[in-house]
Amino acid sequence: MLEKFFISKVRVKLLKLFLFNPTESYHVRGITRELDEEINAVRRELERMAKVKFVKSERKGNRLYYSLRKDFPLFQELLALVNKEYGLGKEIISGAKEIGDIKFAWLTRFYIKQLPKGNMDVDLVVVGDNVNLDKLAQHAKAAEKDTEKQINYTVMSPHEFEVRKQRRDNFVMNLLLSSRVMLIGDEDEMFL
Image 1 (tube, rainbow, N blue to C red):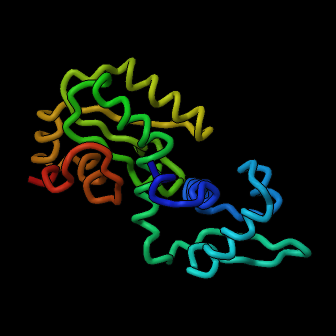
Image 2: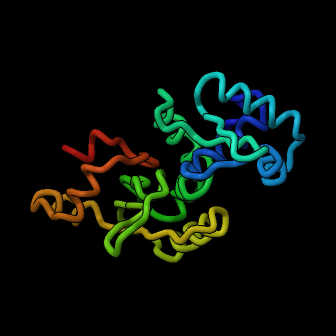
């Protein structure tokens, strides 16, 4: 779908590369190999992205490296778009009906910003009834294969979610107070 909004498929591939790996730096030839695109097309798009300050460039030796600028004004919005269109977000959105009656599903800051996780941290939260755990696991495994990162998720019924919210359960409060990308459901309804 993003290819229909953004004219350049190379630009979409670059957005995905930088937003899925926000701490990495890449040189042009490395990007060209990774994206399997023409070097001139990659250079052209990188110049455009640098001009609008989406990426910054830094010379190391005789190579020019590009990295994501997290202070880009549309960073959060682009991060949400890419995470809904690719990887785990796409898997959950496209497989929602077979997974179950999902009221809310969201990606946590650990997944979208590639932060290190502790024992209690999750990448995906699913709140719903009749959730087919096998189907959910299949979609998570497909996303793991695509991103090459282990995915941790938690599933709660709407009743359990409400009870834990009312009791101000530490785990649920941390989930609600952290940044997220909503995949399914209305974020405002979560707080009612």
